[in-house]
Length: 167
Image (cartoon, rainbow, N blue to C red):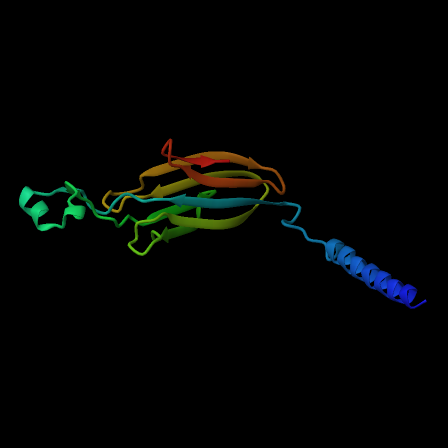
C-alpha cells in the first residue's frame, strides 16, 4: 500500500509538471511581427581594410630583430572601422560605425540591426565603407523590394564576391 501511495504521488506530480509545460508552451501567444509588417535584418560581419601599407624592411632593420621576428615586410594589424548606412524609401533608417574586434583592432567588425517596416514595395539602398583611407562608400546596392507580410529581408556582405547581398 505504501508503494502505491508513493507511485500515485509521483504520478500526480509528473502530471502537474506536464500540464504546466503544455500551458506555457501555448500561452501567451507570441507573434513575431504584426500582420501588416515586414522585417529588414542587417547582419554584416566583415574585416575592414588595413589602416596602413606594408613596409619592406631593410637588411639593417632585419638584423636588429630577433631571428624569429625577421619577416621581410612589416604590416600594421589595425583595420578600418566598418560604416554601414541603410535607406528605406529615401529616408536614412540606420547608420552605424562598427569598430573592429580584437585587442589590436584586427578582427571583424559586426553590424546587426532589425528594422520593422510596413509590408509592401520599398526602395532599399545600402552603403558600406570598409576603407578609412578612401573617400565615400566602397560598396553600394540599391533595389526595389516587395515585402510580403511577415517576410524577412536579410542584408549581408559577401567577402568572396565583394558585394552587398539582399536575401
